[in-house]
Image (tube, rainbow, N blue to C red; front, side, top):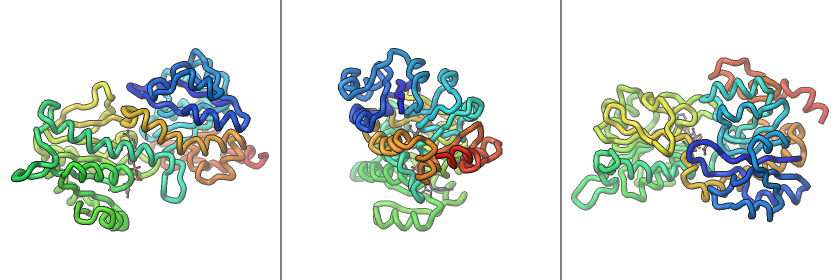
Length: 377
Ligand SMILES: NC(=O)C1=CN([C@@H]2O[C@H](COP(=O)(O)OP(=O)(O)OC[C@H]3O[C@@H](n4cnc5c(N)ncnc54)[C@H](O)[C@@H]3O)[C@@H](O)[C@H]2O)C=CC1
Ligand SMILES: CC(=O)C(=O)O
């Protein structure tokens, strides 16, 4: 198979979908890899590194997209990339389609086979989302602390306090991968941490992990309202795979927060859990203020630490991408249920139920849409 790696074009997105080590894995398996010139520079990988690994360096994005059977990316294609779509092209990347109606329509119209990293699932785990959630969770703690500084627009508190002065309060809604990693950082900084989740089992696990270093609360509107009111730093970390994030924190709740408090809505890639996080921000201009509260809503947080993130991401994506290349997309998805769950769009149909429901499309199963192709292979 011919695999293409375009340069990411989202604001301050310095990750790349394949490292030179990943290129070697594809070349050794008999495939060809085209890498857009300078695609790896932001992550510290030069064109020479890729060429030495066996990749062909291509001058323009258009020529990468046009020549390959599978595109591997990090972030969802932006509108300037939609005209590269064509029937049967395999697109393997983060998509977050429930928050991307125009991209969904373009993938459907052009009959791209779009496989989303974030919905590939093994049981209840999301192996291709986990490493970036670890990064974003850890970043959420440190970014929140930074924006609480007066010079950055915050109320001017140190999360750990000092002897004789109260510690800052951090409320984390969603105790999964992002939430757990945010808690690790917040605890490390000495904050007073509360984690809210809908799953009693998850809350038990969190207490087993962190003991008395955290408080846990069941997710319901009353508990959320109380915890939001007290929080100096609020972190949104809820996920319902594939679906738009539920707006658990209302505008009225945000109004009860102290002026200069900070919200880091990590779940913004799925639309955000805070009603007032009503738009995505960029690393260039990461915050906005509403009701006196600083909102941070960057949808590609790991893009700011690209060296760590690229290696962590490709560690998990390459084995799946190799299956797609070695077996062909139809055999790979019919033999690997985890990968099949990643298929969000195929043959002009929406094949992930939560996306179809949120965006008002008919849902058609992968088996039904690809009935002929899966049988043939
Ligand atoms: N902004 C960014 O750059 C990044 C964003 N993310 C996003 O962060 C979000 C969280 O991801 P993960 O932690 O990996 O997901 P996860 O699946 O590990 O955790 C989600 C948690 O939310 C809980 N939950 C579900 N409904 C809830 C409710 N009503 N109230 C409270 N808790 C509820 C679940 O029980 C689960 O523990 C996702 O939207 C993910 O895409 C991840 C990486 C980077
Ligand atoms: C998960 C995701 O969208 C990101 O790492 O940017």
